[in-house]
Image: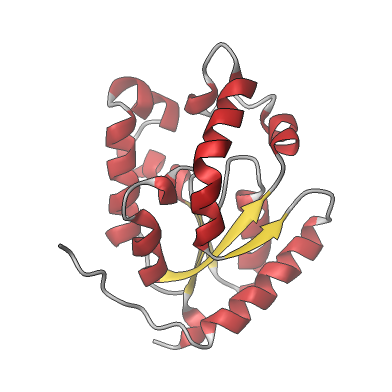
Length: 184
């Protein structure tokens, strides 16, 4: 496989711009854009909210793992990962074997503003979504910081963020070689 065809995985908290930036990067590279949540919805015939309600969060997390393991092509993909995907045990390491990771980052205040009107985020279907965001962000941020290059998405034009992601991708793709994750 040519290293220039390595997949790019955009990770980070909800509302950091993974889908918007991912589409821009895919257009510039001529790659296919996939959103892991949308792919899981398509494969299972239910929205993420419906999966959470009927099957539970553990089932959804299992579907995420299946998607990363064998639910998409191994090359020329830009994948916007759900905010909790790499938080699961072993998932950060698994994604690293599949391609280049870039973590998009924003402040809690920006995330609150960007997600305020969203009705499609089951983890925010609680009495106090702002408190839930703050709690999840605090839990997940240490994992996001270990994910790879972190790019701030607030207060910057999308085109600037896309260019930054492209620079990181081209730099890291030169040396990327897919791996198999050793299983215990």
